[in-house]
Image 1: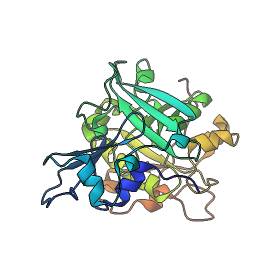
Image 2: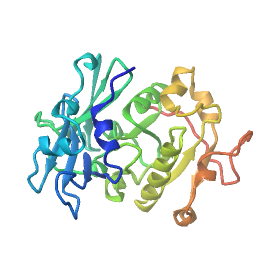
Image 3: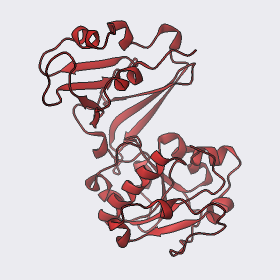
Image 4: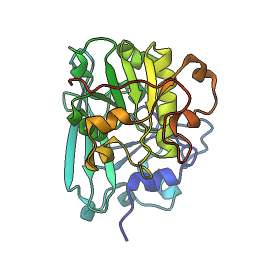
Length: 289
């Protein structure tokens, strides 16, 4: 049986935890906490970092859960077998942060952030304020060009092999870039590619709203043949081509959609559908990166 990810172990004991920048915030179990004062985040080596602003020690916090300090660390046998670093630039090309992905032998993935000078984490900056991955690639791209947005760097890099412009959100499905963070992309036609699960579709629903409010032209793509949780990287791994990409259903996101409570129908066509929904179709052309 694979050893558990320590962050998952801690968050399972904090069902009320909420995203806060690069980590989470919750009530501390070591004292009578009326307002959330416990910060939870991931260290560069995968360990869980606990910081109670009321002064409780990490030892006292884990003891309240009947755990020990050892439970905050990645077991030695789960040492990362692969590490990938994704530099994050803004649209002018300035390096803003570095996103580090570590793949562990049991299939667990861990992520951490660092600043350009090597400082761990984001220095207090919220993840939803970060630019999209591959933003520097748009420096010479004309306005009104088509740009695909995926969830996560791996999918964006894979899809870019088709010689199309790609970006990726880096905040995870639970969060969404702010309207201000999306303003630099308002001059492009954005086609959103959701991961094929409820979390992925919800993420792109919120992104579609925010990007539309930022002034961008937005459409949502569906991949009818996708299996559960598959994304653009899987599309490429299964032999995706520019011709197949251009034929995938794409539905325009309109201002009216801003007020709809559920956009599932606009993101996932009915089972068995062989054409886009009734909304206007957007013609997609493969363009240079």
